Amino acid sequence: MAKAPPRRRDAQATRAGLLETAGRAFAEHGYDGARIDDIAARAGVNKRMIYAYFGDKDGLYRAVLDAHLTLALAAADPTPAGARAAPREEVEALVRRFFAFLSEHEDFVRLMGWEALSRARRGRRLLTDRIAANLDAIHAVLRRGVAQGAFRADLDPRTFTMSVGALFLGYFMQRPFLEALWSTDLRAVRAREAVLRDFVRLLLDGIGA
Image (cartoon, rainbow, N blue to C red; front, side):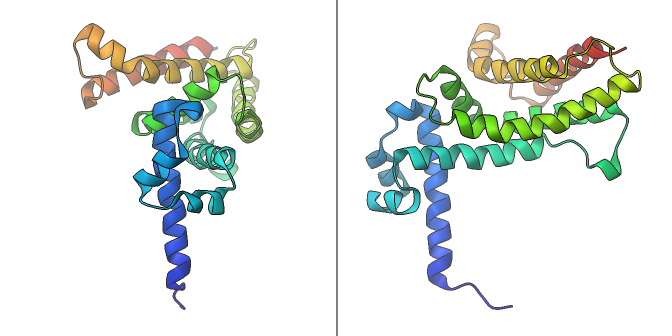
């Protein structure tokens, strides 16, 4: 197999490095607080490279959101139709994967927090378009569970997915405060498993038939 030209590999590495660095900057400071000069300096490149790859600050921000969403939606993707489990098992697996993703991607949690608070809505269309398609698949699993009698007949799939997002994102956004409040390390394996166990019971028992 022919090797990719070195220049192409360098360009891909530079772009990936900029996305990673910019992701941390936007997560730490929000869109308004992040500075192109600082991002370029932290990435070790001339800031003209940012404009060459992403056009402007808005383009860089949207690229960061898109990259993080790709990872998040992969974690929240329902089981393929050919390998379906029972609806309750499938929803539990999905919930557990999403929690695991958030526990390992704090920048994504912060980005969602900044975006929720922002009035500018720079990334809102990107978020709604990409998340809506994924939610359709999840809602189909929930409706299948209702049809099979596994979930409550009055279950609203939108309310359930909204509750998962609010519960999990809210928890991870508050985790530093909760650790200080309770003088505990919620990142410890035992603590993380205990929190997830209680969340799963709360969510799944709440929609059970």
